[in-house]
Image 1: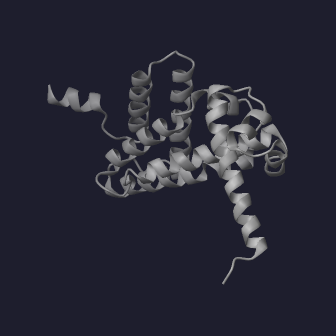
Image 2 (image 1 turned 135 degrees about the horizontal axis):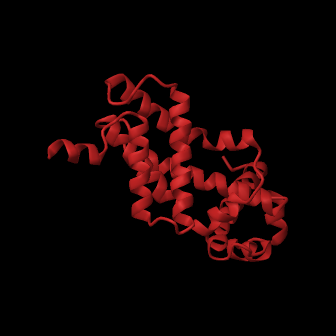
Image 3 (image 1 turned 60 degrees about the horizontal axis):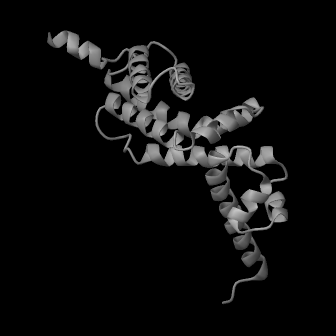
Length: 204
């Protein structure tokens, strides 16, 4: 049975949107102030097509933020967060999320300057928060993590610490290794779990 014209148009629209977002990620990370014309040319579409999907540059950047979040979530899922001790699973999640988020540092800096609706920002972070929350809750049930503080607060604090580590690294105040170590140590101490330093001190 042949495809309907409406179905074909929808498929074409989805392909165009995906091509625009792919192009925006590549171009804006290298040239944060590149215009819509450059993005359109890279995507192989017209400028009018870009504006049909994204009426403003801000809307395009917010859609790019959603795309990056999807990549972070996919990277987290690939770490098998339900496998092994919760402590190790949480560190894998944080490492994977950090690596995925830092593939486009200049683009992330540009996105961070946008005014963001609090509800939209919450919704964007929800998939990440859900995965972190599942691992923390598992650790609370197994006794690896402290269960005396609210789960939601622990999740929010973990995400804030991850953002702080990323900002310190982007600003050049910490190296990537220093930021990673600070994040791991801070999160584990907040959760009442043993850190690498704790293990070293006990072994001496």
